[in-house]
Length: 403
Image (cartoon, rainbow, N blue to C red; front, side):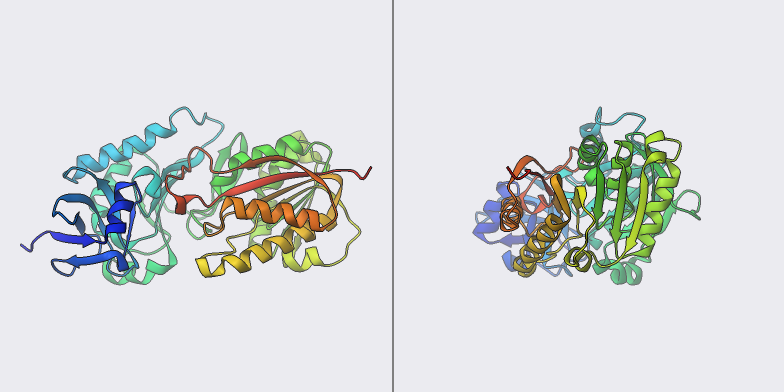
């Protein structure tokens, strides 16, 4: 039997691990006793040859180790995994009632499961992996999920960068149903009493953007009697909340016809709600940037800007800020006097302070004075335990009527 994989890291990486950061990059490795395999448990020792941490080793990723435990030596076995899962479940206890059956059970590193998220959609649970290092532990992890959560089915989703490796080495594919009955249509779940569909087999992320739940509720509270524009609308989450909140009309803008069809289906699922039935719902398939740039006479009282990540790597950060500024300026052209702009970013490489200041500056450049109503971050089921996890931010601005 080969010796346990032992690693040594730079002084900076040692300090980061002791400070709670869960990642060790390849360039931070100072030495290892032998080549490591995907998913192997790697023990990290400090400069004095004392145990420092243990984590999942990924030889194919620049993020070489994802820490599971820091401190005194511990045994990582089935019961350890069980307790770690129960801790994540306990953190969600009391957050949701029977009117919400879609939420996150496990949020990666911030719940002690680095590179793994676990989402619930009614009786279906979706596990998404961002590192193949989890796949060698599958025989331990899947039975635990089944025992502790007792879902009807479990679906596996894989990040694009690991799909080829997962198929070749582990015979796992994206959208695979690990157990439970097959699916021939999207899963329908509840969010604060509204019905939504989630394409758990092929949809973005795990099938729906659960992290915007609290911002959708805020939009609902602001929507009464307003004409609402939802830009980058995806499957109409913000729009449906606005409709239930009493919006006079809602217009969805998205480049994807698939997303807009999903938005229409979500409205159809909720037609029994009088306010939804009364709200005029329109969809426009187009590029959002181009549409906002074109001159138009239609004005909206509430505009939601929730684009996909515009900076997936640090080098894209400057361009993302330029794009955000362009979007906000375009939105203010369409915003009525005393209208409200809701602008969100899901780009981890753009800090909250940079994003908020960009939105504020863009609003001033439009010659519109505005009042900042609120800024928000991650919901409770999506905790952000270290800087790189802090991707979600949202700002609410109300345009002031000229005096």
